[in-house]
Length: 127
Image 1 (cartoon, rainbow, N blue to C red):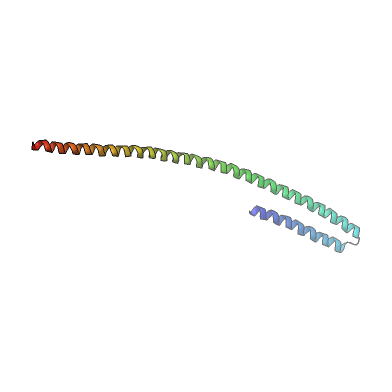
Image 2 (image 1 turned 45 degrees about the vertical axis):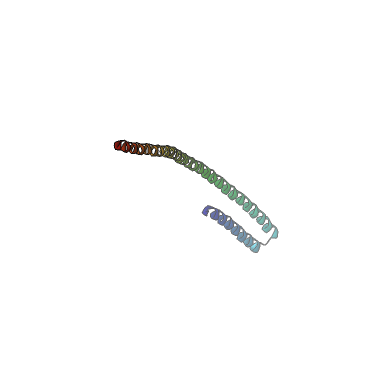
């Protein structure tokens, strides 16, 4: 962000410098043609400076965008790996909970059988 502001300030500085020079040339020039010729050269130079500044700025922005894309891809890859590990843990936990549910049901059935057997044993004792 500061580089953008710096580039804009640089361009504005060049513009102000050129305008001051133009005003000084016109004010102190005795010949109008010389002033107009100098004015044309100044604007041509300014135009070239602006083109170069914009071109450099565009190149810097393109490079930074490329770097950010690469960093984002790397970060996204790491996040995807972590997400895969998390999903794997969730799947395993779900499978274990299923097995645990079945085992709890089996334990209940076994307890009922044991209880029934204990009742039958008590009945045989009385006979």
